[in-house]
Each structure stands twice: as C-alpha cells, then as structure tokens.
Amino acid sequence: MIALFLLLLDTVAPVQQRRAAFETTPVWADEFNINGLPDTAKWNYDTGGSGWGNHELQYYTGRGGNAVVENGVLKITARREEKNGNRYTSARMVTKGKGDFLYGRFEIRAKLPQGKGTWPAIWMLPTDWEYGPWPNSGEIDIMEHVGYAPDTVHVSTHSAAYYFKINTQKTARQRVEGAMTGFHLYRVDWTPDAIRGYIDDRLVFESLNEQKTFREWPFDKRFHLLLNVAVGGDWGGAQGIDENIFPATMEADYVRVYKMITK
Image 1 (cartoon, one colour):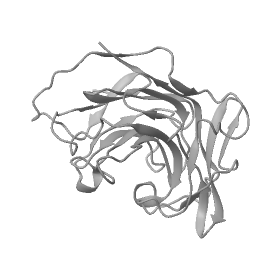
Image 2 (tube, helix red, strand yellow; image 1 turned 135 degrees about the horizontal axis):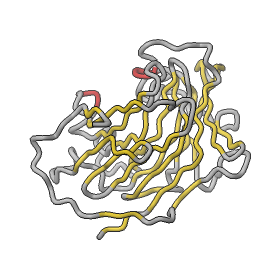
Image 3 (cartoon, one colour; image 1 turned 90 degrees about the vertical axis):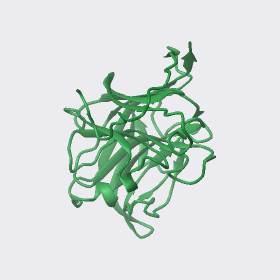
Image 4 (cartoon, helix red, strand yellow; image 1 turned 30 degrees about the horizontal axis):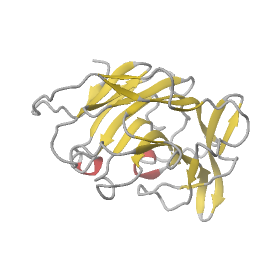
C-alpha cells in the first residue's frame, strides 16, 4: 500500500460504480503567468483573525504582502507581524462565486512551506451550505500538512457522520519526500460515487458514496477551492511555533479543474 488508510469501510456493502472520465482541457484554471496580485476574476479572499474555528493565530489579509504572483508561481506567505491583535498575517484565497463546481478533477502543483507551526492546506468547502453548517455540508481536503511532521501529507473528507472531532473522519496520510523543497501534484477526482485523492498521480485515498443520507455523503452540491497557510491552531500549533521560520511560503505552479464526463 502507498498510503495508510485510517478508516476502513469494510462493513459497507459495495455500490455500483459508474465509469467516469474527465475532459482533457480545463474548464477553469489559473496558470499564474502574470506577475502581481492574483487574478481578481478568479480569486476572492477570506479575511480576518477570528481563529477560524481552530484557534489559529494568523490574520488573513487580501494584500500583496501575503499573496502575490511572481515568475509564474503563486506565493502565499505567512509573516510574523502584528495585525488587529494577531501575531501573524497570511492569506486564504477562495474561488467562491468565481469557481464553483459539482464533480470534476482538481489538480494543484504546489511546494509546501517549512517550519514548525505552519499549517498549509489545499481544500474545498461547500458554496451553498444546503445541508447546514460544518460539518453537515462537507469538506474535501486535497492536501494538508503540518510543519512539525515534515513531508507527511494528509488527504481527507469530512461530513456529519465522518469528521475529526468525533474521530471518524475518512483520511489517509502519505510520506512525500521533498514536499517542502520541490513541487508535487496534488489531485482529487470527485464523482457521484467516490472521492479519490492522488499525489503525483498515485492513488492514496478513497471515500465511497454509501448511498445513505447527507450525513455520510453531502458531496452532491457545489464546492469551491481554497488555498491558505495557517499559523498555529489546534493541529498546526500542537507542538509549538518556531519563530525563526518566517516568512513561510506555500507556492503553487498552477490550479486546474477538469469537467467530469459520465459514461
């Protein structure tokens, strides 16, 4: 096995898997080829310093000091600086309202920040929250990494029945050599039947639709993408923060979304 699956659904009866393919030309993409601020036609920002539900320590801004495109690469940078009572600043970029999707292939080629206390994520949240507040409407984590566990990448899904606060989440972790020193491809294939996670095109995670209720599978509504670097928090700060690592930057070479074709 190339991944350690932390939850095995071997008691679930298999469901009929429909064949799915994906178009070869992206339906939405950002190649980050223009220097300056990220493309406002594709990205919004979540801003503020409320802790974001995880006791995080950063204040998210929408300024170039925390998110900028340089030499074909998006850079999201966490900095050690005071902002509205927070000790750090960073950015949380979102495609909500500018890139909302129901099913598809999602590819992000990225290099992760180094240092204890960093918590970068490439993930998806529901656009309309039709099943109610988190975790009812779901969450898809394409890539999560905490700096105190270098080169260990996590892929997960969360729902009302399966989420981390009750220790039932569907998740896998994978060792990715050089995750913080080089670029790797993080991918999710999302279909009506399953969510499958890949790293460098190797399958590392699978969550199947059990055909029950939204509590198990809220993944039949629109979701949007998020890219961010958090500082500290319940998970990212569990072993403290190295104050000498800042600025700490996650880089993205591209983000591409491909439409699903059902066969």
